[in-house]
Length: 373
Image (tube, rainbow, N blue to C red; front, top):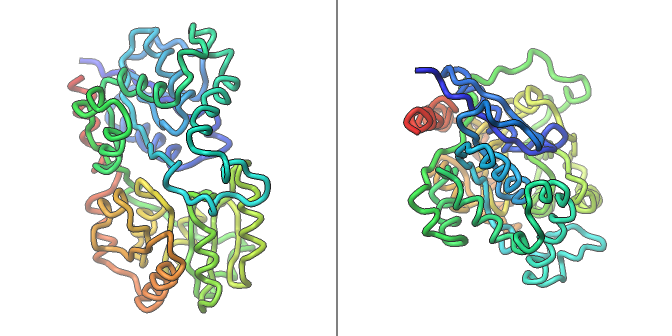
């Protein structure tokens, strides 16, 4: 029996702005390819899907893009699976955390924002939607668009039970709950470190520092983190960059940051891993994570790891990490102090991650599901 031909549908702008979904898609590609499936990563519209047996879609946080992909796939009679990678951010991020400057998000009511977003997305994707015969009346509600994506998916793969429950609570549960199968996130089995650190970063190796890896923006909560380390005797390396919409947030961070905070921008993965491995700990105090690939990667080195005490994160890490309340600067400070007091690598943490969260381990159910379906 010949192996299925599978299309993995990535964000159109993934090459410009990589994220956790980019890493996950590449990992799924590598795994399915190693299992003998014929796999392609696609990040554009207007593709001929007649050669494929199955499509896998990602990311309901980009609903119109994912919706277009779903319609194009169905036009060819191809079933699709969905990794939603979703959380409703409207009630998660406190308004005072949003970017400084002129920012309508701070004062526009949620109901107005929910009505304006579909119009904004429709204008961006209008030509593509027209090709598919979709008018604005069909996409006047983001909830309706997401419901359609979920309803038409053959199977849905949340990254946690918490995410599954969040989807069922927020959307048409009758179209979701019997199709949800949790497939967790993972990390590389063997993370190889480079032999040398870039020259401009070498001096950090002579210091005591914790790192925070991820895109810079309100959800990641670097604002409370920067405030929390102000009077602590430790350096903080913030590794990542803001998207265009979060430039004001980033500029404000740099303005209020103390002399012990260093913004070193986006780095290649090998350098990030090297900085992690040589740090005394990693912190990711996000308002929500599902669960945060950077935290899994850091924990795989056995370094003390601080994460937010939110549902999906606790499902992954159980009692093996340090938890903080992302809304409380005091809680973040206390968690960092606990990390500083620990100041040693944990073989137990490392083995827990490597035993449970390698891509080979977490994606094995996906292979059986694809072969069965």
